[in-house]
Structure formats: structure tokens, C-alpha cells
Length: 313
Image 1: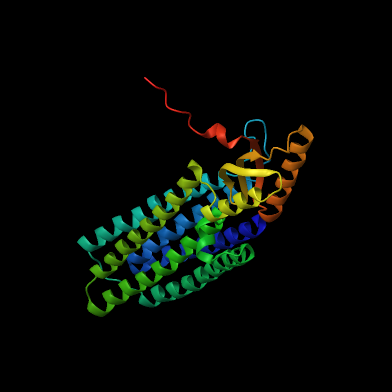
Image 2: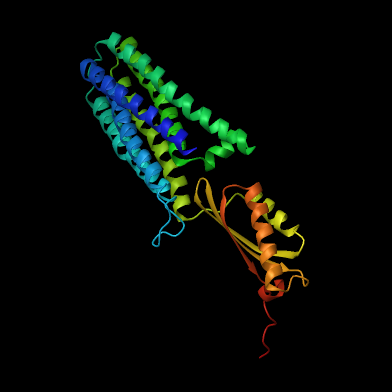
């Protein structure tokens, strides 16, 4: 999955770099603020691909004495920086330039250049978007979940590319509408309005990505239904009376830590029996849930967690 994700990010980065140059040249020639806003958007996206490639490479570092569960969380950190980049470079520039263009509008020229760049940009962004969406759909199918449900938990790099490219396609349509309305009506403020709209779109994307990556960095558990499946699997294992408590932590999209407190059957008393039971549970859980890389069982009588009787005054 990591190699496929890296290919998706590289394709998006190459497309964004070429598109950013084309948009910038066309924006300067035509004077279109909306096109310059889209150029800033593509520059931000290109920088983000550098962040995402860094995330993929650094997250592969093996665990060491300082980071004993590995470096998987790096993916969420660098993806969070990408969200900040979208907000500052993309949205900030687009809104600032849009306001300036509304207050001091200028005519849009070289429409043939503008429309040519918009069409070519839409094609390249669409190719990158299709690559990301196909990967998300394939992974969702392999895991037996819906595409939208998987997108919430997907590899941060692929998720960011999918969101960026979706915003880029919508932004290109907004820019085309703004330029067209300015040309047809003769009211140049439409071009600036389109730039502001693109900025607001990017704020929404940045907020969504930033919120999701913040949640992962803080420490997010597995979905309730997955936790219930793991709990039932362990509870149904011969030798287990009850699953007292189950805690999970996502260390990376494909790495999960699970800690389970279990009440053992009275027959499981010797160290060898407990060890054999733990091995069976570990194998069963990992076989059905491959992302569970670390599973720790804590034999704890259920009664030990019950609150004691209140003391009498």
C-alpha cells in the first residue's frame, strides 16, 4: 500500500507543478485574479506533495528505543502541515487577491489563453484525482467497507491528494464561471468574487484535513463496530469468561495497538495454559484483523473493577 500511495503522491506532485506554472503565466498575461488564485492553490498543493512524500518515507523507519511503536504517527503530522499549507498559501492568497480585485477590478484579457489553461489543468487534475479515488475504492473493497467509510481512515497521503484534487477540480470550475461572467457582463468584479469563493473552498478542505489529522495525533480508537468484533472474537475463545475492557489506539493507517483486560475461566490457572491461550487469541485476532500489530492481554477478574461498598460514616 505504501508504494502505491507514493506513486499517487508523485503523480499529483508532477501534475500540480506543471499546472501551477501554466496557471501563473496565464494569470499574469490575462490579469485574471481567479486564475492567479488557482495558481496559488497549485503551488500549495505542490508543496504539500513534498510534505506527504516526507511522511511516507519517515513513517517507514523501524521502531527504536526512543519510539518503541515505530514512526507511523509521522504520517499524520506531515499531513497536518499540508492542511496548514492549504490554509495559508492557498486560501490566504486567494481571498486577499479576491478582495483586492473586487475593490479595484481590472478587465480580464487573453481569454483564449485562460480557457486553454483551465481545460488542460482540468484534464491533469482529473487524472490525478482518478488515481487517488481508484486507490481508495480498491482498498475499501478489500476491507469490505464503503468508500466513504474507508476515506475517513485511509492513508493520510492518499486522503489529502483526494481532497486536494477534488477542491482543485471544483476551483477550476469556479474560476471558469468567474472569468466567463466577467467577459459576458463586463463586470470585472466577478473574477475577484470567484477568487474569494476558491479561498473559502480551500478553507473548508484545510479545516477538514486538519481536524482529522489532529484527531489521529491525539490518539484515535478503532471504530466501535470493529472493536465489538474483536471483543466478540476474544470473548468466544474457550478459556475466556468475559472481556472486561478493550482499548485501542491507531498508530498508523495499517498499525493498531489493542489492550484487552480479560476474566479467565477458572480452569486456565497454570502459566503454561495462560500463555497458550494468549497465543491462540493473538493469532486469531491478527488473522482476522491484520492491522492489529500489537495485542496485549491482561488477565483481570471482572470483580476487581467493580466499585467496593460505600463506607459507613
